[in-house]
Length: 627
Image (cartoon, rainbow, N blue to C red; front, side, top):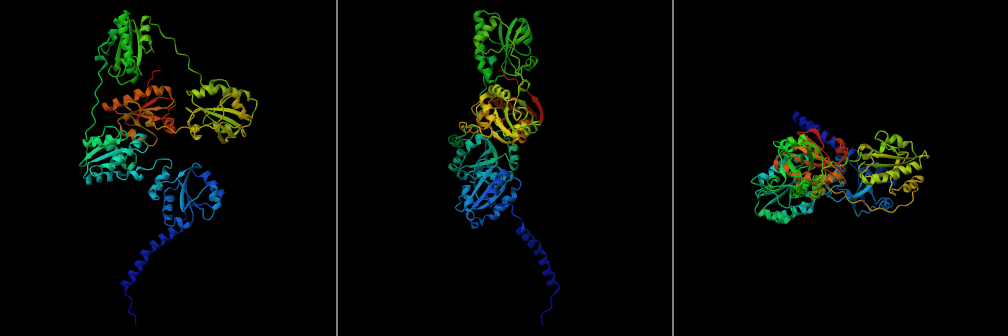
């Protein structure tokens, strides 16, 4: 007879059953969960994906066996990137004709990426979850440094905790490069840095820390990283030196032989200490001096200003010329960075500013900067003619061109069978040249009610220009009842516009144009200027965090083609260096043509607009720029 079952055994059996139920349910749910990877089986379906998915990674296989070990990882990536990217699956072994049409030819497996309906690139990273997620988050960006095979001797840190552990455990001195992935200087320095890491790995540990990510942002603040790349030398867990030599392999290796802090640059002698015939005035003696001298020309300057430095020798020679020719009058100078009271009184907003005083009173400004012109002026001081009246806005000029705004753009285009739109900026020279031809064409075709010529000022109507990917001026686009936008690539003469609009669906062939040059990074635009290493380069991704780190930040929004911006850039870069040395805050720059959303957010509607952020409180400051 079988032994009776004890109550304890029954209880134990039930408990085990209860514990197994959730695991079985979980496994079953996982098995029954619908895959997020789209299986593509015909051309029409694939074309629809290209039209509707902006970030598409296509997994092309020769057979289902090719991905047997990777399927779960692909599913995990699809789950992680849900709403941000789409994964599609094509079995070329089952449909060779389909794959041949799209030039898919996997030996076993190949991954192809499409962005905004166009082929972007073949996937070139590791077949790993993290690598694939990083790629899909930024499919046009560079390969992460930690995935570069040549950078295996660089220790890559991804969190504050990991960095703290490294400082505690590593016995070697550490040279740490704090960088941002978008930084042009960092990209150029990485090959040299990783080469040094390999050469000195038995003596020093070279470390890379991307401090542009939330997990490492605290390190950026802790070590006061205000520019990229910043290299700090650690011994026994403590910062000992800051690297300040050239960013190449030979310089780094030489510096590691005897690490030290950068040398403090020697201060330039003050202009007022130099011997010359220029009289240097202060807040205390300015009024008395101009009252005592009936003819005084005053140059307001800043010691760091490049244009002032360029003008100084001519101004000094002109002062000596007045004395030699016994011309009545005095040339004086005021350092506006020190004598702020008098500079504010006469509304000095840019450097150099040259003002003429007659019989103790301000008369007018002088814009001549050369010795001969200054001497000639002082021989017979006459007020220069007034500047020409400002140019009328295009929409104020009577023409058949319709000027559209964000709100009227779509409603107007929907009513016109054929509409050619010129996206422009008021200061753009090519736009000014095209305007009369565009207006003349509109006048010639004004009787045709199906045809319209329209214009959009992209410095004001930023929404519609961003929506239509306008990246340069002028940009011409053709619309058919507001749809099927096509970029117009024809000539810019009246006859060209007319010929196109008479038969826009079958335009005459135009010569092929070379592809535009690659967009130059912000760092590359400034790299040749003295002081540029002290600038902070901002964009939409790092703007808020960077502003938060400095007690006050002066930001220059500019456009690379802007003449006033080009004139201002040398002075702004030098000022950045001086401001950093004096501990007054940070000077930063934003290329408004590359970061339109950021420019629009802060209502930037013209070139060389500077704004000040003080403890994250915004106040407008428009800096005067000398013509």
